[in-house]
Length: 487
Image (cartoon, rainbow, N blue to C red; front, side, top):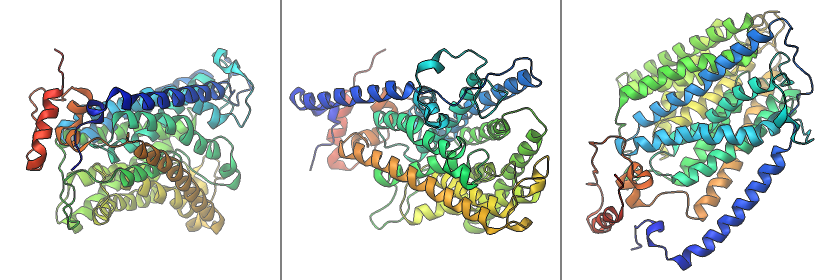
């Protein structure tokens, strides 16, 4: 039987030396790429006229929405920490903090240029741009306002994976992933849809990110969960599901409420101006959320014979994800139907993952990937011209439209899913081959708060390793003794 001791405790210096050299080479290459890409200049040739009508109001409004989007990280953190075990709560909080720290930096230095440059790499001029440099896609917004709003979205896309790989991924692996998706994978998808790329030209519609944000992150979550494998004890030898309850349901539901409020900034701010259409977008967002919770209530009651609180919370989030693509293009009726179906999908998606033995501790894959796919495709069915102020928006099948919009929605969704799954799946496989993806069995049993950070979330917490096999406990106890604590 191979040793379960952590590699950083058992490797000799001679064994670590080649690894260190490889890391130095990889670090040098990564920094070179960052410098090269950071020299790009996003599309922002126009200059904002500070005296133009609505400039100050539009910038103030979008910045407030940006703050709401960034605060959504707190909601994600609470949902994920609450739905996992106490011994991993600090680790979960840190990963969500990391999504903002790394996401904001990586997206600002690299990703923003890829997303909105249109291939125009002309030097470092953007770094010294004044506060009136426009973002190009929103004439009244300064580049700084546009950047802050969009980096919140990048962090949200990154954080979707956190819950799906919870309780068994190495922190350094997650650090690498967070940078790659924020700086490269997500921005490429943005360039296709919101940066004037090929999906925009095709006629694909994703108003605020059901696919751009949630399918991108959801596909990465699926690949991460598949490649990592389930947590120890999650399924028995016959493949039967053995649920591992979260340690703090009130914390998780508080996170749902924070996400709900933050989503008003997420969708409302995507108007990129303080005009009357914001009210419509936020109304559709609220209806989608409520209908999502209702759909999950019905689905869980019928399937499990009880209204499950965590599934209903996820139903609310699924409704939000589903309505996000068409928040500016669907009616009240459409928002309710899209949200309700998304709630049912979020609930049954959790049960489906159980049957196929995919371990997703927080239901991130059903909520973000499955509901994101549904919401994006639903635009081709429920889009109504009357949703826009001018009454000249696109029409879905129910409102006299041709199948072309539905086909475009399916095409874009498949392309985004395929690209994100391929890119992030390759990254996870590389890290797995290098032995830096999953923690050891001993560390997983101990809990990542202690094993990875030497900081328990709760001072009165204790280590429960009764489910560790008897012949492994000696090694487990030896590992505990080797840890150094600093007062």
